Length: 531
Ligand code: NOJ
Image (cartoon, rainbow, N blue to C red; front, side):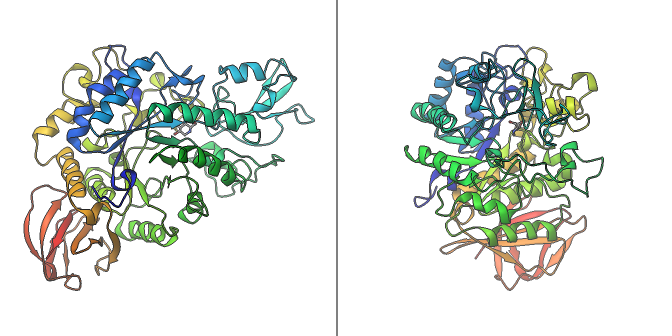
């Protein structure tokens, strides 16, 4: 690892959705002890940090993104003692641990909200966003919840509506109230003092709403196959100018501690996204870049455009990052198919910037079809067909009953293919997706050009092939990715004469190549160390 770069710049982040990673007590839900038992695997795989989706006390209306106690561990996942043991065991292996901070909303069962809804005079009333009904008795404006239905629920007892951009059981906090800010900053300090290495921050771009809460305008291009909330443009409920001041405060709290990282969840085109680095690089260290997640057409031209527009938009000193999947999005293998998922993995692990990998993608897990009676995601329940359960299915560890995930009944169905597609089987297979992922991670670790080097696109003359150079001092690596279903013959003599294959998506090719006649099989990606 580079000495001139920070750990979160040179390292690779692995996202664990804790309900689905490893169950240790047979209740069918993953837990902290389960994660501890898999740390050796993560060390073997070669990632540098884990980000764990919420583990806090929660009624689980949104599986932990509805927090009832920010400094407690939900019994589903274990105890604070288990968390401390996990942190210690991870650090002992050189693995950093990031938690998920959920500051936009609490659970409606959080004592703050219980207190707030007790009366209009409650000291906590203004911690949330309350409004009188519209003259017709309906909600105060037309905002829609991201999960479907209105973003307002009526509180009978006090006669006002409260705002919830997500589930009615997730009331939005009022970030214009300084007491709310102070309370969440103390939550951050609590975990940072314990030694967590940073946070992924949930929907950070939504923390501040327009002060007048105006109606959102209609999105005229909306079609019924899209999620219902896209019927409106999200003009006033997110991405408000004042949010940056708040994020700078959040950053200042992280800065009280050494070498911690803040990763902001922000779905946005690169031109707007980069504002979240802050004018003095004083907001989040890494505004999550989801532009490969939201990309519809996976082809060389489109991917190159995503990469180049991002490189152009980045502010001086702003460190890039890349994501292929998470617990809210269909899995990469289901979006693009397995051959291209291998190519995507090579892309993720050879681009400039910190990669975040979603658990299970290293073995090419697919979305698991969920029968209607097994749907549990609040979004799936409110907006049928748009649920996120498929990408949250249990990790496929081995071919045994329960896939090595649980000895009980898993909370979500296991994939049909788990007996074939699982970690144990792929570990034995030198050409598997897992072997490819591990190899790429090792290559990245060993080659400064890959983990911290410069980036430059290479013209390939073939619209199916995206190629780029990664360089650091004398080290020059060429990455060539054939997105096409046909072989490619390239003349890349402009970048060099000869090289040695250091990585191949099919895991069956090493040895010398001539750049004047570089051949790529269909969907093949190569990393070539140039002479
Ligand atoms: C984004 C999280 O990733 C998602 O899972 C959650 O439902 C919403 N924020 C609300 O917290």
